[in-house]
Image (tube, rainbow, N blue to C red; front, side, top):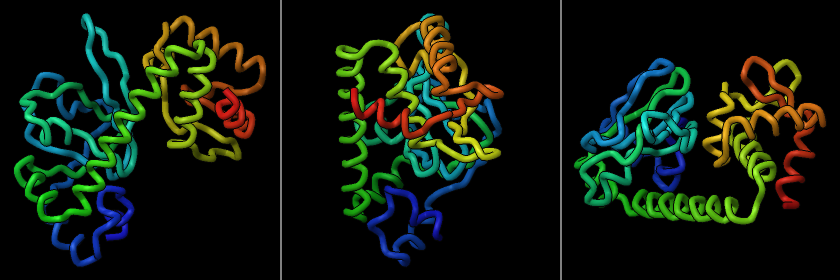
Length: 225
């Protein structure tokens, strides 16, 4: 039950209310690389990440472009259920071995109608998404690629930061294309910028994971821009 209490969507619920809603969800394990749903598919379920990492992406001219990476407690697949949208707007795949819980769309609507706290949290979640989307558009307009990369690394470190063998890392295996998609630039540009950051000893690459050599410098750079 503690795990459910840590999910932002349910933080306003009492323990007895959590016990009531748990049976409404089904837990599913997805191995790395397993597709959960594809863009254009019918929308029937909402999902919550219990563990692992989920990649959200869009396909353009046959190429996948990473939109976001989701971790524990994140909700996805809900917007198409709340709005009268019949098809998925984005595709979702397990970025590494992950466990999610899923709920039928009709049951989900009943749940948010029955529990105002969940409805309020869901509304705040959607507002936060809109704010983040606007912030990204603003960053694209006023910041150069290096600054956007640093801001992206800051967000990834804040969400997926961990200690490994005494080093501060972003605990994800990311390709240069993944980063380029999130930054909004070309893969070649990200490769050049990462090389520069390695020479400046800001980051290092280790087994496709980014080692943050100076977390304080990374965070202060992003805040100062």
